[in-house]
Image (cartoon, rainbow, N blue to C red; front, side, top):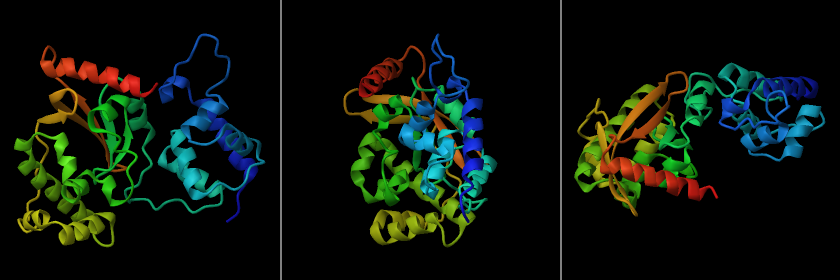
Amino acid sequence: MSIDRPAVAQFLRHRREALQPEDVGLPRGRRRRTEGLRREEVAALCHMSTDYYARLERGTGPQPSEQMVASIAQGLHLTVAERDHLFRLAGHRPPPRGTPGEHVGPGLLRIFDRLQDTPAEIVTELGETLRQTPVGVALTGDTAGLTGLARSIGYRWFADPSSRRLYAPDDHAYLSRLWVSGLREVLAMRGRPSRAAELADDLLERSEEFRTLWDRQEVGLRPPEVKHFLHPELGTIELSCQTLVDPVQSHSLLVYTAVPGTESQEKLELLGVIGAQALR
């Protein structure tokens, strides 16, 4: 398949002009005259240079790779149908439907973009972090930047015991059962071959604790209502986790809150300061 440069240019320009700053969590500003987003804003959202993106809009750029097309689709907050259309225009076969992927739906992204002062993250069904707010990074560290099997929190739990330091010791036993139960459910849905199967096979070889819990055949466990985080600077923080699920992409938006007037609420406000400082 070859790229249709004029069609790509027209589609990108239309989608950029249709997006407003507030749609992607950007301030509008008083003197803004541009219809929709500026090219440099879209380029930043897509993690590419302004020149590269501008050439695509002018129809003079190179054929973008599949990875680049996926990044553009995410930056422009495209739906799955729009993403697939862009893949075809760019001369690539779209990712298969009906399987979990990393393309976050625009609805979930719009909500996420409005939570920048709150600990929040978007994760896959295997607990792989796709997006984190600055306060979320201040709470759990930068887990969105991890690669390989270690992207999964359940995998890290058994393969890297130091990852457990973030949680109160009294919660460890249940959380171990929780991750195993969740992985077993995903594996039953996805079958083999799948990323869930890859995780399970690796941990069965690597961890005796995982093998013991896997043999229990437990399913249906759900996260506790309150999570006890152990922050290296602030100590114990008790947070509730609200979850919004996108059934199409099998992604979840996790939002952490504290009971008003509690010590944990005060610590959460301090986390906001830590998160803001990290952006400077």
